Image (cartoon, rainbow, N blue to C red; front, side, top):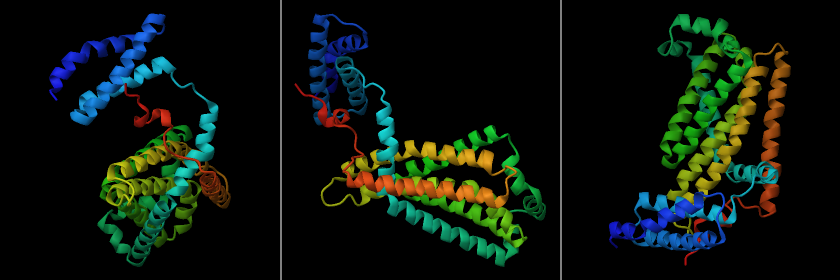
Length: 331
């Protein structure tokens, strides 16, 4: 198919469809014209996809068809019930289904981190390869604790929320290539293990764990979930299974990954609030740790209980049928 000739032949129709789709009000005749042009554009999109799948043209026609469909049927209205369903069924289900992946990430990360801690405690001189004596002294005496009260609570919350969101996004997005996720996890495990090993070696282990637990359990779990789901996305195109193509398996896993990403925004906000307000507070250390453990356990219970219930109820994490590619009409 001569793509340039095809575009030249139908571009006038597409421009007219775009004009009609942008109007807030149309006459009865224009409405009939809009429907007819929409059906023709959907056919054109199907033809281009099957015969000459130019990415730029496919994207242009896809956007045009979606805009026209919204103009005809009306854009979906915001509904609190949809938000409620997301947080009570869809999100916990997506996380629950990926639990073998993120629990394996959590286990591997913990083993590696504690192994590094133990090695640094047994060989304190190793820390000098990465920081000088003055830096070690500052960290043990003041910097580690002072880090959590360096900024005002609201500023600290926003900074931590942003940083952790970026880290989790890197794990999710890099999952399709597998290796980037492993590199990010190793880097963070090494930093936590080195810092913990130094604090323990200098008799400040209680301070280290006391300051980490209030926010760190939930924060790290969110990162583990993001990394696990990211690796699951990557594995989908390596081993799609006997009944799915690689492309379909990747798309389905990526869709669930996007759901998890949306939900983790809220989870990371909660961990940011804990780090910004609870960790540097004047509450007794044991009380702060207890609150952190309770919040973390509540999140795990939320995922397991609601996620399992949603799975038993047959809830789907896929897009609604009217939003999928297969539902585009062909005239």
